[in-house]
Length: 129
Image (cartoon, rainbow, N blue to C red):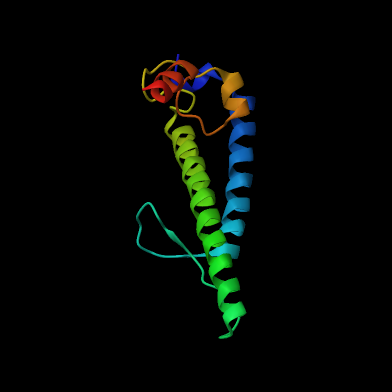
C-alpha cells in the first residue's frame, strides 16, 4: 500500500485543486502589497512603500500603509510557502504523512487544514515544548 493511498484519490484531487486555487489567490494578494524579488530565498517578496507626496500628513500615511503592507506580506507569504510545501508533498506522494512520526494524518485534519504537515499528536507535543 503506497503512502498516497491512505487518502482516497477524489479527496486528494479536491485538496490539490483547492490548494492551487488558493495559491493563485495569494499570489494576486501579494502583488497588491509587495513585489517579488528573485533572491530565491525564503523571503521572496518585499512590501512596497507607497508614495503619496512630501507633506507631513502624506509621509505619515505612507509609513502607516507600509507597516500594514509589511505585516500582510509576511503573513500571506508564509501561507503561500505552506501551500507550496503541501503541493510538493502531494506531488512526491507523501502528502498526509506526518513529517515527525511518519504516521498518517487524519483526513479530517487535512480537510480542515490542507497545509498540515503534522498529525495532531505531534503538533500538540511541539506546541507544548
